[in-house]
Length: 134
Image (cartoon, rainbow, N blue to C red):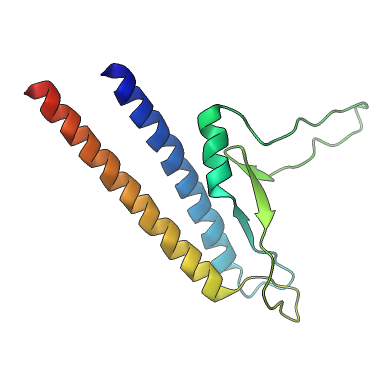
C-alpha cells in the first residue's frame, strides 16, 4: 500500500511539475508575441516525463578543458527537459516565430491536462483514505 502511494505521488509530482514548467514556457511565448526575433520554445512533455520517471536527464554535462571556457547552456532546459524551438508555420518578417493560434491551443491543452492530473490524484487520494479509514 505504501509503495503504491509512493509511486502514485512520485508520478503525479513529476507530471505536475513538468506541466507547470511547460505552462510558463508557453506563457512566455505568448507574452513575447510582438517581440522582434523572439523564437517560440517548448518542451517534449512525453519524453521529459519518461526521463523524469527513469531518473535520467537529457542534459549532457559540459566538459571544460580550460578555466576560460564558459559554463554553457544556461536556461536550455527545464527540470531536465531540453528546450526546443518551435518550427514556424508561417514566419513573420521581424523574425518572430510565435503563432498565437498554436500557442493559445497548446496553453489551453496544457492547462486542461494539468487540471485533469490534479483531479485524478485528488480522487486517488480520497480512495486511499477511504480504504485506510474503512
